[in-house]
Image (cartoon, rainbow over all chains, first blue to last red; front, side, top):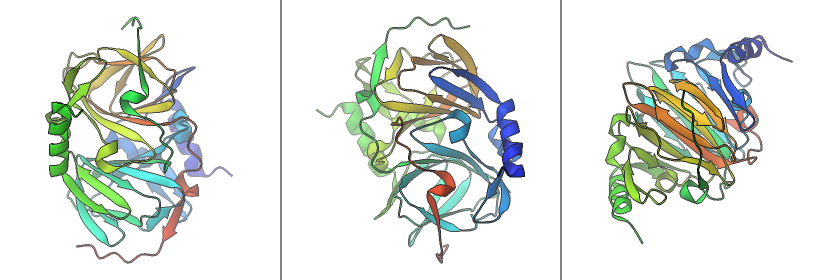
Length: 162
Length: 162
């Protein structure tokens, strides 16, 4: 069943498809301040939330899922959670917050990056006067084979910038 | 052999370690405008560059590698590249740019998200008057099993926010 939130989001996402080719898909979510235009139905809360957009089905990623997030001032994520098989990485872009992981609580802000193993019990709150912006990446724990310069291949390619 | 760039970066990274527990590692890179404090030696260019920080060894990710990037106005990444086994996702946070992928060229800006298959030949340039900020995620193509709500588990957990 497609919920009303899903069909509204799908319509918005379709409108914002940027460009697609055989080897890539690009979309445009709009300015981070406008992230709450995307509704999302959350099963465990049995209600719609705003300010979190998942991109896996939007740009067809196969190695990770990620969400772009805007958490208003004064708001705490209303539940803690862990994962079954995915590692998560949080990247904080703007604002002030606190992460609670297992028995620890610590401050996060622009430039903070956090890796969480699947079993970590996690929650987040906005402790600032402004919105808190962050990106959350899910990938299968232990799945990365090689990376960085070991995986890249320099290619001679003439580009017609236009 | 550890290069001078690597040892400078390792010292900075060590100073900025935020917090570590059994199930997580957190670090703090500082404000995005200060990303060029981290030197990095690029083998294919045989020189040091500034404004790109990889985080895999910093927070010990096992499912993805990612870099935080600041590209100055007027600058084009000096080579095109593809990958062997990793998919890449680019997330644009601030500024104006263009991506060249295979024979296509298109504009990117705050809120643009792009998935690239390993074989995509890619390059990027800053077309704006300000710096271009983006995050680039590498994960093994096809490695994601399940995600989003299917992988999450709600946990009852009393948090002592402090």
